[in-house]
Amino acid sequence: MKTNLIVFGTRPEAIKMAPLVLAFKSNLEFNTNICVTAQHREMLDQVLEFFEIVPDYDLNVMKPNQNLYGLTATIIEEMKIVLEDAQPDYVYVHGDTTTSMAVGIAAFYYGAKVCHVEAGLRTYDRKYPFPEEFNRQLTGKIADYHFAPTLLSKNNLLQENIKEQNVIVTGNTVIDALLIGIEKVNTNEFKDSEIENLKLILDFQKKIILVTGHRRENHGQGLLNICIALKTIAEQNKDVQIIYPVHLNPNVEKPVYELLSGISNIILVKPLAYAAFIWLMEKSYLIITDSGGIQEEAPSLGKPVLVTRNTTERPEAVEESTVLLVGTDAQKIINETQKLISDKEFYNGMSMLHNPYGDGKASFRIIDYIKKL
Image (cartoon, rainbow, N blue to C red; front, side):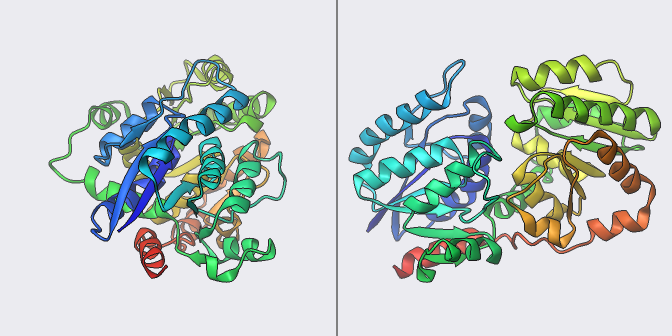
């Protein structure tokens, strides 16, 4: 029996790896262990609880004022102990985090086969997004097997001289997670205090605009521009309600609360757990975000997305017109939002399009590929 070690550390990784964990755990042909680095602690734990996942190893590396130097070194050191205990044949890492990059290095040193989930995304600008683009390129160099969400991602890898037999297009596991999650939160048995609170504070007679933002490259003037745009949108559209779960990073929290507090139709809340967040996505009219995962998820719910970034490693959504790149230009954000609010034909054109990121069966394609090895 082959042994798997699935490793993740942040909330987005946990969401996207959860369906793979559940699928492997239900497959008796593999012995599957779970390791979390806890690069994000509280938000990670919320996802583990929602998907009922109990890690076999927990590195708990998160520290106050942590920097990339210490984080990378700590993960590599701690993973040596885990790898020697678990003795995996395959180590699965996800996407573009420091956890993925550092675990990939440690697994390579150990001698396990490295499997990269959500492989092949590229901007080809190593400083944008930082450090994610560098992390994903380096992880791509380390990995033995590459699970690309789209054909474009696969072609990126082939152009980098990755052998075609080692790349498979699976769709994105985030869609697997979303479909599992939406079904769960809409059952009568599911109870969640955050969702109950949202029901109390939201006015569903209005068009709900969901906003998120956390990218380092938007800190400073970029975030200020976004806040200026949101304030203008709120003031010009009283039939709209903006809800913004504000990231806890002080570089985000401070300017957002300073510029957007006290506006009657803008609601600022603490970050939401996964269950409440996907429930809120489904209830929203449109989404303004710099998140990569939301660019992939929202089209499955029929929600147009305005992306507050200048480039994206997910160009399929741009090409399919399920998302629009607006950067941090305040006027452009205002204009495109206004168009989606007032132009029903334009809105329907975005909301009814095909999701290029998959059908919810990515995890099973990954397992089938590994079985054949």
